[in-house]
Amino acid sequence: MKTFLLPFLLLALWWVPGPAIAQHLVGGFAQGKGRAAVALSYTRESFDQFYLGTQKTPIAIRKLDDIVIESVNLYAAYGVTDQVDVVVNLPYISAQSRRLDSDLKVRERNLQNGAAVVQWHAYRKPCGGGTLSATGAVGVSTPLSSYRTNLIYGIGNQSSHLNPSLLLQYQRANGLFATGQGGYSFRSSQVPDAVLLAAKVGYAGARFYADASLTNQTSTSGIDIGGPGFTPARFPETRVSTTNLGVSVYVPVAGPAGLSLGGGTRIDGRNAGALRWGSAGLVVKL
Image (cartoon, rainbow, N blue to C red; front, side):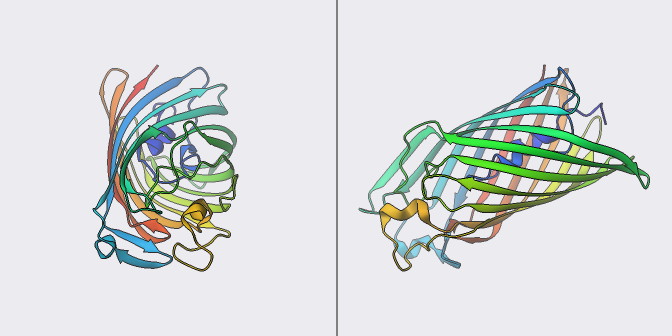
């Protein structure tokens, strides 16, 4: 649908907490040769419960304040050809947390992990009154600052990631679509690798976009917080698994500019906060 240029970028505006963000910069809609878009978004996350291992525990038991994470994200996308897109993301995050070794309350403000994705819209064919398409992608992310990792909820794990993935999408002529995505995240610095999965249903039209998504990250190894062998110094080695449910919408407002809104919640996890979040963003087509 050439009249709708930004749905894969809008998926990025629905902020997905954690290190899997490079996966969620991938989408089934091509940007188009020579077309570019820039987006700026604000996200607020919070939680008052934490998955210690797989057990959801109120953080008040540990005499901790509710955790609040705020972030500003800058995205840019460019269509190199009609089939190849490049997407980049630059996040700045502020989080109030506590040290694991001393329980000292701290505020972490810093650039997190920059991410870049190259995606190839390799296949697109009519199928049963709609269009079936396949997109392959390779995403990379790496820390952009020396943020701390020995916190109850740090802004990152000081690890570089390589995320190959494959996305299949079916879209009806009326704009309704469904997407399934699978990938793998290779991670450095003793951070466990992870399997990445996502499913999405929605509507993409010339004047409106909306979707609902279910995303999952499952670590392939690692240790549990508070489990055998765990120390604060080994926090990046924890086995982090999450399942998130989210929604996002986009509407044009004036000329090349549009607004996006999103939100969601974590419905299951392991060694992760039981998050809820909301976001708002401004998108400009260039």
